[in-house]
Amino acid sequence: MQKTLILWGGILATIMGSQNLSACMPHSPNEVFIARVQSFESDKNQTKFQFSNHNFIFRPLIAWFRYSSPNEWNGDFKIKNIKKGNLIIGLAYPPDVNQARNYQVSSLALLHCNNDVISISKPSTPFLAWDRAKGRCFYTDKSGLLNGFLEKDQAYYLHKIQAKYPTCRKLYSAFPMT
Image 1: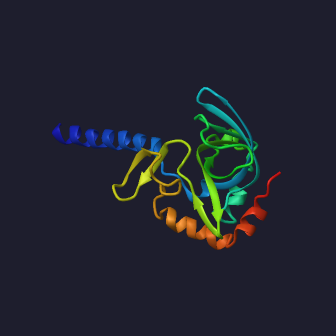
Image 2: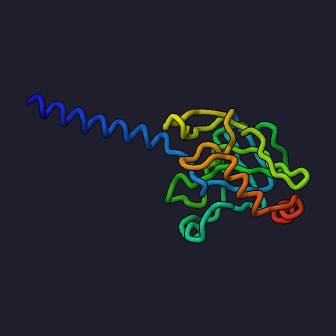
Image 3: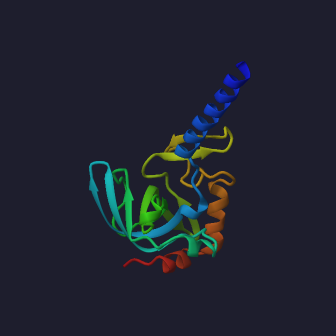
């Protein structure tokens, strides 16, 4: 009887733990995109975005077949410090396979380039991220937008962006103003 209770307790703990885990899935580099803000409409804590020249910059070739190109971009936050025409970097994913062209934006940050050095501002809104040091999720706006991944940190991904766009001219020509 005691062994049965321990077994069921272990199964229940596993189920409960997996539910918490699914609610706290770390972001993926596949979710990182760069775009120009074309327009946005905010209503309470909801925002609908229109982006031009968007590009999911870390997706491998196989991911281009797996994911649909976004038709709608929605965020569960009110926009701060971002204006039409700004170059941004963000995290977005299709939350529903049945509506794969509707993307959920987790957070955005301004993407800057000065003297051929690319930098990322603080995220415009707090978001759920992964703390590699503690092995758990945390809700933050203090950490860099690209610090919430399982393996690498923002410095690593910023280096990859800088290698892809070594000059401000290359960055801005890839994401021109419309």
